[in-house]
Amino acid sequence: MKEMSVQADKEEVEIGGLIAGQVYLISLCTKSQEEKGEVHTIEQSTKPEKVQDLTASVAQTSINVAWKPPAVGGCTGFVATCTSQSSTDTSSATTTKELPLEETSVMFDDLKENDIYKIEVFTISRNQKSDGCSQSVTMVCTKSMFTFGYVTFIIM
Image 1 (cartoon, rainbow, N blue to C red):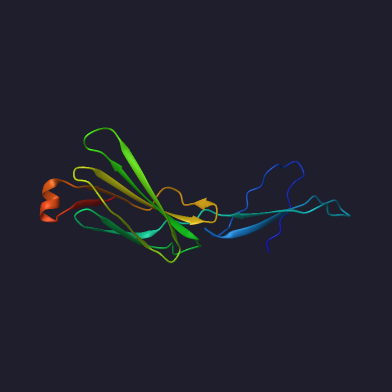
Image 2: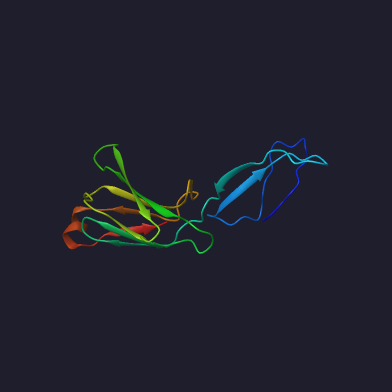
């Protein structure tokens, strides 16, 4: 347990040295020389670290993405999104899949030729989501790629 004093004129305080993705109980009370006031406690989690080692396996009409959980801190699960950008108009669509901590891969099916797909994976720790995404995979499926089973993807 870490205890710290704050000047009476302060309305906020920054607590450093915390671990990413962990849950903390933060208590605050007023204190005079003789007495402590009523204690107010909140539970808050820090933002988790990003996933690591994102890899993609591409088939003719699907993509499977796998990753490793963060090495430091904790997380309670993952959110994976697949955003498709149509090659024929300006429309786009996003599919979101929430995954428990035990699952470190996800498959997105029914990809269409000539559309561009961006896959993002985020770590979740209770009510916090990792900053940005660890990696993005952009894939363009073309008719010739479907015919020969060859797909180009870029890990950014």
